[in-house]
Image (cartoon, rainbow, N blue to C red; front, side):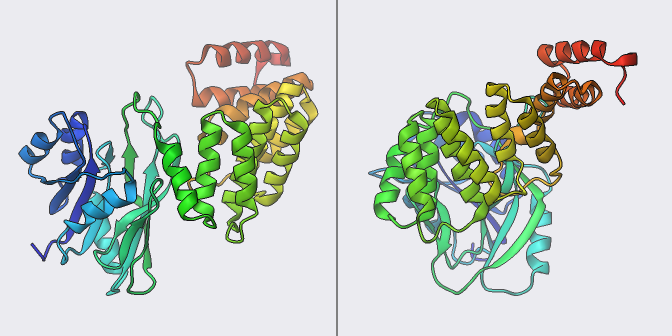
Length: 370
């Protein structure tokens, strides 16, 4: 078993609904190792029936890094490439051949980590929603999982890892829509207690407070994040400022929201997201010149960030829809119609977008897009 080239490993609990789909996708690997942390359904039996090596492992108190390290420990020490996935994910076919080719072309290096495309969410038509680069493929030695939630690979000796870029490998996240985020807050709060000076944990905690509508806690936590010595990544800082702005918006403190959206734009002017967020505030205030300016700036940015901080709504019909409304209010009917048509191209069955398009078309001399 020590000459395995590609090994998949995972953790699971009560995920029988995903077993067959996941095992089909992971069948390109030489072996699959799974730690079940307490299933009461048919998950374990189904995995074994499909040929997975399954181990039982109780993790108390629960934390994701401990569970993943337990799973990784079962992977044979001689495995060449370790692929960590979850049962609600699936690779697009042909991933193994692409991975091995890129891995070998990178040279004989003792420690490697591969980065690939991850579709965290998919739209109804199957196209990517939230998309970013992921890095859960790695050499067998020199890595361990850290952080109780939003766990990530960290160094476990052996020097710096060689980064292998394989964006043409695509992993799709297809979760149970009924699954909630219960327990994330407790784990993230634990992470901040354990790593009080670590930007990663504090950023995620502040974001989770925002998701949980604890907006003052989000503001306080994200401001603390921005004050940390290690919080230097501009894109993440921009996202934190956007979330502060959004929390102020929910608290009906529009002026504070505007200040933070402006700071977010200044922090990372090459990202669309803050412009679109600020434009939503301008829409609320019916400040059509500001909304128009912000969206012209956003739409002038043509390259989407490959990182996890990008928002799908900055790259779907949203900016075109908002720009169409602003242009119409300013009497720029041809620009309005052009943007309305582009919004419809993203979402052609939307009754509201169709109605807006027809209304704007009636206002344009000749009724056409210039």
